[in-house]
Amino acid sequence: MYIAGNYLFSGTDLDEIFEARRQEMRQAIEAMGPEEVREADGDELLARFRMADPGMRLDKSYFVDERRLGPGDAEEFEAANLPAGDITKFKAITIAIPIKGDASLFEGRPSIYNMHQPQADIVDDELHICFLLAEVEEGHLEQNFKQHIGLIERQLEVTQWQVMGFNAGLPGAIQAALSERKGKP
Image 1 (cartoon, rainbow, N blue to C red):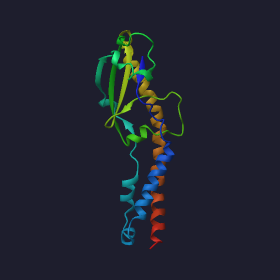
Image 2 (image 1 turned 120 degrees about the vertical axis):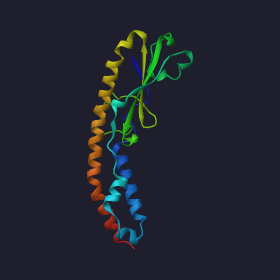
Image 3 (image 1 turned 90 degrees about the vertical axis):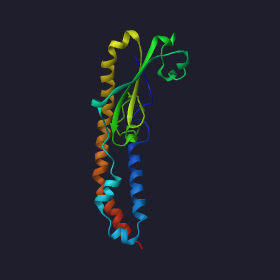
């Protein structure tokens, strides 16, 4: 059994994503007029710039597609390293899992990196996991799905801890940016 799709949790470092968000917050505060700064509501700014905790809604998972591969699919699934031979012996089964939170956090690289990265495509706030399997492997789909979900959950846990740290530091960062802005005309 093979999995096709992009690697999750292997893009931009999460610390860079968080710094970009802090910079966005500082720029928004810098752009405020003196009256806006005096009346600024820290809770409103916190709600605007905090990052939503990422997660999966496994209870809402569903099958998207099941199809037999054909000769025209060879290039699409080349990265999956299917064994040489007749590609028509394989099926592609795609399962969708709705996600919550910021989808970019499923792409960002957490501080603890796993060499066995899960794969899925992010499509409209869903993870689409495409399993490529021979007919004799169909009985193992549920087991492989659970194993793959386990990989995603382990990486997601590290990401969630980092998001909690970012969100915990945000009120202080907002107050510091507001104080600095109050000192400027």
